[in-house]
Image (cartoon, rainbow, N blue to C red; front, side):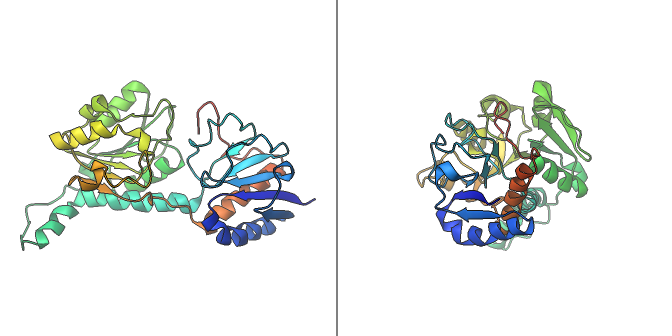
Amino acid sequence: MTIEILYDANPREWPAYKQAIPAALKARGIDHNFSRAVLPSDADYVVYSPSGGIHDFTPFTRARAIVSLWAGVEKIVGNETLTQPLTRMIDPGLTQGMIEWVTGHVLRYHLGMDVHLASQSGDVWAEDVIPPLASERPVSILGLGALGAACGQSLARLGFPVMGWSRSHKSIPGIACTSGANGLKKCLQGAEILILLLPETRETHNILNAQTLKLMPQGARILNPGRGGLINDDALLAALDSGQIAHATLDVFREEPLPKPHPYWAHPQVTVTPHIASATRTSTAAIAAAETIAAFERGETPPNLVDRNLGY
């Protein structure tokens, strides 16, 4: 039986996905029609992202699932018309990309690369800027999902002591896992470098604010490749200006692209990257989407099924 799959994601990515997803489905023995022209009433699945055009899911009466190409689902999970199962992107390529971005920026901070690069212009021999060994540089990660766990374990293998926090307690080799209010406080107090990899929910919105930033060691550094709404922007700017936080590297923002007048652009202690910490790569995302559809076709619950109550 041929299943009907509607593509409703970024139109610019259609030329790549119209080749990659059918190939991945064919390799899994799934007879299908994958098109941008499938009628809502005929669609068995929707390959979706918020950059597509669908806002009302009511006409999709036959759809067995909405398969998101994005890891984050905060833009859709609260849609009241969405009654179909929703899955999010869990992709080895996305995970590896995040590991590489996080590791690179942690090492930039740890090794004092900015000082040495700046000294080039003045021919300064900055021999007194010697970093501690990784074992002496505690790192904390807020969010221990697939991305947070992978990044934490990679940093631990480099020798960093890694502490992680999640809403529900977890046990992950190489990471000192915490949870709850006391665990969050402990994570923040011990973080010379803090990495945010939480989903954005009611509970995590503005999790970094004036009060929680004060818990961190003076001169700590922050990486946010998670979600823009995790940080209260005004509070972070104040903490940077006071010296409480030495630097922040931010890849995600409440409004994207980041508006030109935003103070982050000109702030000397902020590095802006354009939401590229873990870009979805067509080749691996297509395989992940096909695996999700194949799981539904086998009558299985895929591991990336979104829990509406948790919001991710």
